[in-house]
Image (cartoon, rainbow, N blue to C red; front, side, top):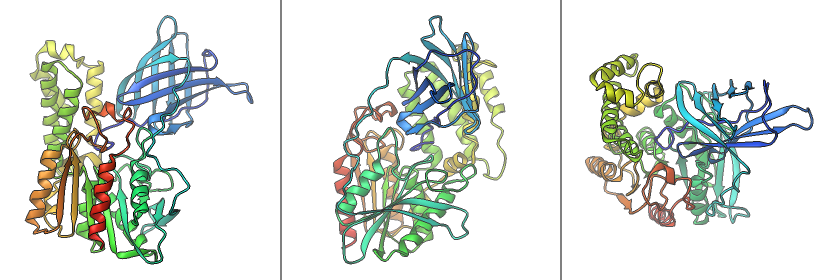
Length: 470
């Protein structure tokens, strides 16, 4: 998941063996959801060999090596052992298009690459902060207590002769860099810049397995990431520039799950901000989320109804199973197929070996990983119902990933149950899951919107923190 939805990890594949050379300096572009995938082929003047690389400009991925690259008269295959995945497809008659499949691990998706003449100029994200800065920006490193994870991040410090309040940022789901970069937007860099200009220090950290941060990611869950945040708190307390009585947390999306966990485990947190965090159970949110995403796909009504029924059935099975026990969901898929009209199964290509069946098998694999199982079973009540420190809970009215109405209501309900006397709930009209001003809120808008984060949101956060740290 990325911001609580799945985005395929796109990486760069470079160099290897050709059975039949492609034309020199060719560029191919395709689309996986809202993410562009680019294949570039060009000669290496130094070695005389042909080089091929994949780029994913929307995810800042480029130039990672491949282990196999093969071209025949009618097909192409690129595979990377580094990430355990790649692309394979067939050329059309005039070799201007390659139709095939992107597969990484158990996740598979159809992909068509079209030959283009040139790459579009990089999008200028105008809110991304650029030096020189009127504050100190320091690259920092530290480890957790048992040295199993080494962290790298950025600490921005206002120019002050006394200790200042500080905010630790917690990213959304998926492996994020310290700026929470998505589609060339850098929301955490924008937040840090705005707050530090207003007298508040900010620590933002690379997630496990990204940038300068190490650590296991395959078996990790939100509970493990909460431990990572606790290590960040310990580091901040060691900094003389920071007022250790005024340390706050800001969690976006999954970060809004992690922050309450940390507050329940530490007395060092003075205030907490949730941006599109969960106020409902994970199983309820993921049902709503997938329903909205399927709805945006404009499926025929009978297919939409059938797929949501299948997804809900599988989510319930995961939710009702103990985390330490194995799951068997393939049998449930077969039962579901037998319960559907044959004409529907045919139209959805759900028969054995067909594309639709492969997509569902990949979906089943994805919801059985430890992180997803933990997320589906997550219940905010035990955490939010114990929080008495100041809380600011924010959502956008057009957020289709973490719907504002029920999730903000959940925060209000549980904070009231806690007897919390200092919280504020804010819904921002017209903003999406990334807190951008949007038309529909759908995922395919994220990359096309120039705004990284609404200035109104930045000001609300800044003003609220200023009140808490007086």
